[in-house]
Length: 290
Length: 235
Ligand SMILES: Nc1ncnc2c1ncn2[C@@H]1O[C@H](COP(=O)(O)OP(=O)(O)OP(=O)(O)O)[C@@H](O)[C@H]1O
Ligand SMILES: [Mg+2]
Image: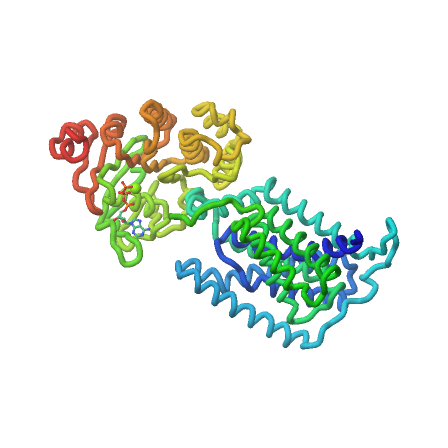
């Protein structure tokens, strides 16, 4: 098996990781699963397409712009779909319904705005191919690896070194205690949704050049959700590891066995790992709260 | 008058727990609130902290009505609650726990001095500064919770059963620390199961029964009241 396959797997794994981080982050802070998180990937990819086409900004700056715009969208989604449910203390299942409603609205909204046809990013972004260690790699693959690594470092620094990041961790530990401490919990949760969506949006822009942008690419969210669970839901390191692992397993499986069974292999491994370690790779073994 | 509750009614959903609670705290006092399990002591504190919106009644703090304000506003105004249990963020370090509590009052604070005050009171916290709070012992976590409540220099500190689960020797220590905090100028509302010791350090006390205040007065008077002794002091 060649190293190139592993690298390809890692590249797709980076995308899963970025999306999985959003899922885990939101879950950790609010206790909610934002099933509509995949739609931030869709909107990000489509926004990226428009930004590149209309403004002609360089790819890096477009990424930053999409990061911000997707973040704002995440904040809006939280306000519309989740806050009312959280504030009124409604049953959790209502949040799921609300999520599903958001998926429909966002995916269909995206189709109205950008149409149903897949949109291809400018070919120049794909970068050039070159040889290292006897493999052919595209420079764009390396960019994905580098940008993902950078984002992870920035996230770590943000969570551990800034007061806002520390407040997020505090809210994730205990919402009640955070309130009593005087932290503006609603603002922090809203920011977490924003940050999660920003990561999703960036993942969309990174993903589109190796795939395409379209109203229905949000299904990648489902696999990333699986990756987040695989790593241990709510755990940041777990989300990253789960994403990378899923990417590599998928790539190796589809070349050694058959690409037709790509998804079956990925989910098969997922189920196997969860049978062995139900709380995920980085999860703690905890019972249900009594 | 620092704090005045008048006819507070509050509860959870359709359950009414407080049926008109009235209570006062003067500046510089230690006031204790005692009563049986389920009487509504924690609920009273939650209403005071803005975690529960009172359905009726008024809360006046430092000359202004704070009824219905959000918890973060109430903390800013100078009321801090140390809740039941361990009251710390387990995955944050000791220092981060204190930083967050200090941050919410922002510039009102000379923060290095505030840290010194807490570390002087609880030297062990200084030693454990960079350790995750979740790895501290139960007693150490309690100290951190109190330090966290203290660091923003609130005018009023609400303590919900701070002695619960502590070894007898630590309880002695704790009550001494509470007196020390009070001497530094912080008024205290102390909810306790340990009624005897609470009354021993308090200026005044209130006794609560099923959502109502049923007796109150100077601490030494409650200590010698026959009905109170029977019901809460076990003698
Ligand atoms: N979150 C809640 N939802 C519904 N009912 C509650 C809730 N919290 C408390 N109660 C009820 O309110 C009543 C008063 O509870 P509260 O916690 O204020 O009592 P307490 O005096 O603090 O008791 P303890 O000494 O055991 O801490 C109890 O009957 C309790 O069952
Ligand atoms: Mg209580």
